[in-house]
Length: 359
Picture 1 (cartoon, helix red, strand yellow):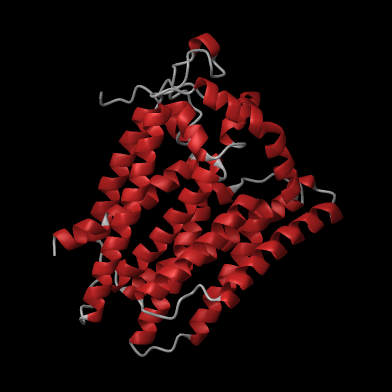
Picture 2: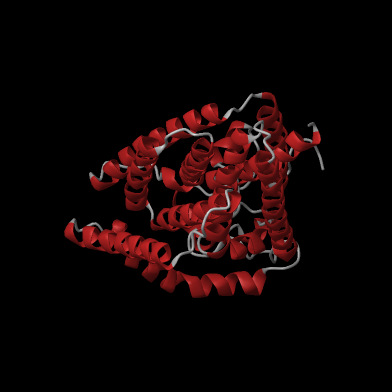
């Protein structure tokens, strides 16, 4: 593969390799005590609360908005679950965590409200990630199972209440953009022809010639339906096909209306989808395997990896939640800037292997 990427896929692979190398270097060079990890997590949670809050306020005031939850929702989830993971570690060390736990829960509630107002897909990712986080924390610290009937019902009630409140708010303010039902109706209208387009035109390595928006100029794959942030591509001066202005509606057919398995199949072919699924499963396995090693070391009195253990729990919860939502519900959750976030979380999980190799 040439050093300078020739298409979107090569650019994604190159950025992924750079992220893996960079994150592995930083994670294993910077000292990450539990107190430092907790401090960074709380700062990030406060920052995302403000960012999502301002963005949602701009949306309600109809003054323009930035839709930050797509890009940074998984990072906010990483910070929140990491903060939650430090609490049982501190409790095991004899530190009182009641007031800290209340503060973390308050931030989680605020992020839920602010992010949920912006995107319903974020609300799904957020609740799923928190549930996964609680489950992983309970297993890592040998607590009682998180999947009690009471807690499952609580999360279900929170989800129903959240979507119901958004629907009522959208009707009260006469703002259809807030309505969960609007998204369902849009998917109902566009999903069938979009799926038909993907299934009829996808092949092993991409799609049939002329199937994409560029028609005869289409590259038969890697045509920009799956891409890294447009600003990143432009800043490097790469001559890749990009969707501007009204052309975005042509990309939305796949980017916004279909699950990621269809978007990645159309742009990178069935082989690209298989590679993506293998990478996701390998990252899941590696994360849980290293987490087991961290737990064994902690239980044997080794306190060197407490901060890394909390980070791994947070990144694993966020990565799994983003994988499920992006692959099986909405492609945009792992596309564009969200794809950069997705690669970063994968790198953050994989980087832990060097901690054990260099021990």
